[in-house]
Picture 1 (tube, rainbow, N blue to C red):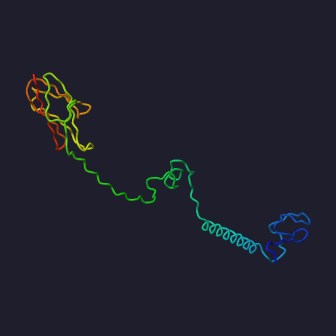
Picture 2: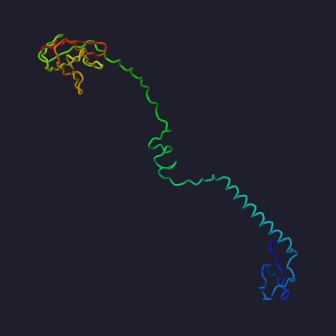
Picture 3: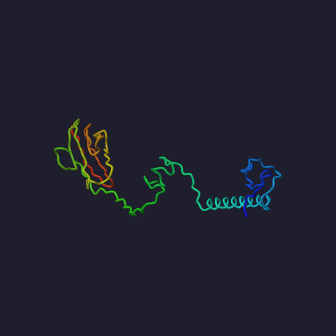
Length: 210
């Protein structure tokens, strides 16, 4: 039994396919009231065709939906650019080492205690041509250079000079090196010049003659 109904020509009474509008035998046009070649009417055949088309459409739709579900969606990824979160030289790709990038732990370094300052153990006063003394005599109006020496030499201490009586003798400290001073005898008499470094001090008696 054919799915496509056949009709009989009204002129030559021959059967032909219902899809044709004219009889292939005599060329007569097909009329709507033309005879059918079989009892298989247009209604069941058309319904069968519609059912087949509907089944095909359903199967196609289900297949496409299944394919869409089985494929992971691909997210759009912007191109890599320097300075972006995915570009070269950022923390995500591991280049240049960002602040948040974890690395091997740094070794613990024990801080060393600061050594105490070196204390002065002794201090002396010297002047040229006389060696080491604690008493000197100079003429009025004369000038002599004095300097101090501390022990140990790497001791950390300020050096201060003083004169008991500035009317008899006056000192001028060398601003480039305060270990050195110039002493000027101003009037006849006797005074004491002292130098202090840390907790230690030394002194010399200065006698000014006329």
